[in-house]
Length: 279
Length: 271
Image (cartoon, rainbow over all chains, first blue to last red; front, side, top):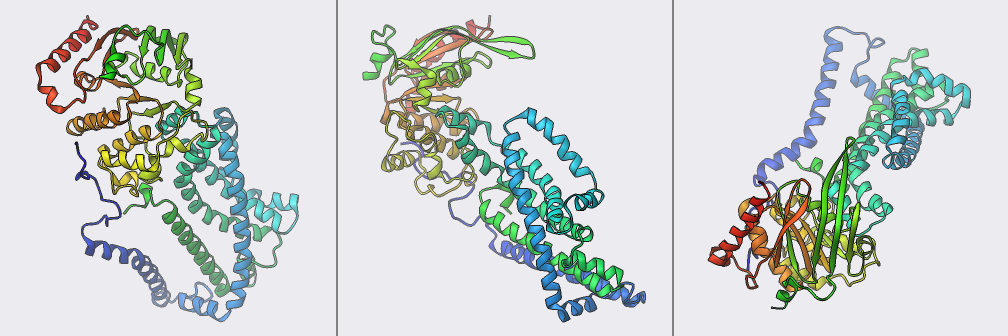
């Protein structure tokens, strides 16, 4: 009998806590939740103090406290506009994800197609969205369609680039192993390529969240929108309403942050096996 | 001593694996490299054969030709009367690559069933039952680790999972490509006897690629010594040590003599 006992050189027994210093990991877990809140609070307090110290007028730069109380006093207004923008951003994000995954699956199998398509992707990325936004409005008219199209274009780039890289990142030994039992290309795709690409796809999703909100807000600027946080910003600028302007910006920031937290939560659950999720 | 019969040089029945006059060329930047030239090799059912040689002698290429992962440029590879490709389609091979190559998002229990689950329903043989797989995991000391993920295991443990994965497929032929090369010397020595223990239970045909003379000698019924430029079979030696093999045999004069002969065979190819 050779080595029937569990290997003492194993990096961890199954289900055992990974950190030997329990106290320290408790502290670091708490700091993960508390530190960002502390950072944001200190920033807002600094802002508040600066407006007092340098005697900045409310109509130039409102204090955080007045912005927050203005949001609090107009909850339904912000909630309704947030719903519009969130829906536009979500649609653009979803369309981008769907199309990018299909295209990535195709070009991950063909270098020629990749060489043909990637320059177009790079062009879409380097051309400022704000430059072709009016063009889409002229082409598609006012409304949801140009907004979702523009949002999908800006979100699609990180999805496409990262998913293509991810689908190609499978351990070649695993591919050969699958080939040794004559597994089909489809099986290799579903069982090996797609799961291997998940870390890259989540990275893309976190980048795309910010881009989706940007696309939706910019779209509202140009597409004759009658609601949405971008529309709210535009109206506030035209009518010189700094509290409404900053209120909309704050709500956008909160939306983006919540979306990132949601994605990180799903990522933590789905990618528990991946090195990026170990602290 | 049933296996000794297969190890006899004059096999009268049709061998399980027959490699005849095989050439393999690789194109590298408009230059053609002859990886294998005129290779003849026969392997009987249940035989443990090592392909021993220095880097670049084509031993891994020969393994992949047998497994239908490469196609020969001349000659033929026959496995149980069919082509290597047909044997691959019928899931006749359990491959153990050099790296453990476990699926990182699957537990040990799922990883050892990975090959069985791919290309389902095409195997010409039954895969191992859950009880048999549990026995194999116990034999390699992995009981209690069924729910662990690869990143929670040491390199040696990962390679043991990789071994069990190949055996669990229930395939009649195991192809091992330097499976212990990346492990430290102490773990390596243990792994050899673990492999033999699994093999004693199932007695599958094994083609084992290695560049370690002692590894080839202690594991094999027969050692095929290969030489580079161009890759070819230089000599074959039957290892008539009794089975089951044990670590104590490595200290016996008979073992030292076998190792000495293999070293001579290898050295002659470098002059």
